[in-house]
Length: 363
Image (tube, rainbow, N blue to C red; front, top):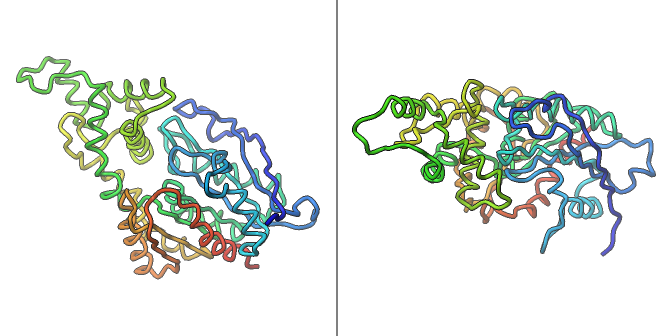
C-alpha cells in the first residue's frame, strides 16, 4: 500500500569538537535528517526528535540505505507514521564513524570528543535548522550495540539533553562482552610483532620492549596492524574484531602520552591481564554506573532496554544485570528479551520507537 513519504535532508556540519582529532578523521560531516510527511505544508508545527546512534562500523548515512527483505529507516518511519504507531517526528542520523571503526559516543583523547559533538553541537544545530520542540523532554536517542551503549551513557550523563533513551543490545558487563575477545585480538596483533619470546638472554632493546607491553603500551605491533588495515579496502573477520578491541581500548583507556594514544588491558606477549588498565575499562561499564547516575536516569521520561537471548556477544547477561541494577535503584524502565541474536534487529524498532515516541510526545 502506498502512503505518504517523509523527506530526507542532507546538511553539512562543521565541527569544532572534532577539529584536530587525533585520528585526523573529518571534522566537516554530512548530517542526514528525515522530516515527516507534511513537514513543509505545516510551517507552524513543531516536532519531537529521534536521534539514531549507529553501531560499530556503521554511520548515520548508512542507516538510510536500502535493505533486502526489510525496510530502510526512512521506509520504517514512513510506515510507522502512516499506521499511527508513532506520530510525526524528526529523525536525525549523526555520522560518528572513526578510523578505528566507530566509537561509543563518549569523549576520548584518542578518538575525539564525540559526546561534545553530539550534545553540544549537533543537538543545537538541528534545533536551529528545523522546527523541533527544542527541549530535552521532546528528544530521544536510541541505537543498537555500540549505539545502544551510547544511548545508555547519554541518558546517564545528559538528562538535560534527552527525555528518553532506547538501549538496544547495548554493550554491558565488560567481563563477558569484551574480555573474551582479547586472546584472538592478541593473536591478530602477534602477526605484526617483532621480538624473541623464547630467548633467555635479553638485549637492552628487548628488555625495553617487554617493559612497554607489560604496561599495556604499544611496542610497534599496533601501529603496524593499523597501517595494514588502513591500506586495505577489505579486512578479515579476525582483523575486524581486533580493530574493535583497539577501538574500545582507545575509548576506555586513552593515554595522550602513549605512542598510539591509548593502552591495552593485556600484556601483548604473555596475555596476562593488567589489572590497573582493566579497571579503567570497568569504570565505563553501564552495570557499574547505575548507582552513580540513578538520579539522572530517574529524570528521563522513558528508558527502553532489550536484548536477544542468543546474542553472540553474550550481551543478554549484561542487560539482565543492568535491568536488575536499575530495579535496585528504583529507576523505572522497560526491559524485554526476545528469541534472536545480535544481528539484523531493525524489526525490533516497531516495538521500541512507539514507546520512545509516547515518552517524548507528552506535553
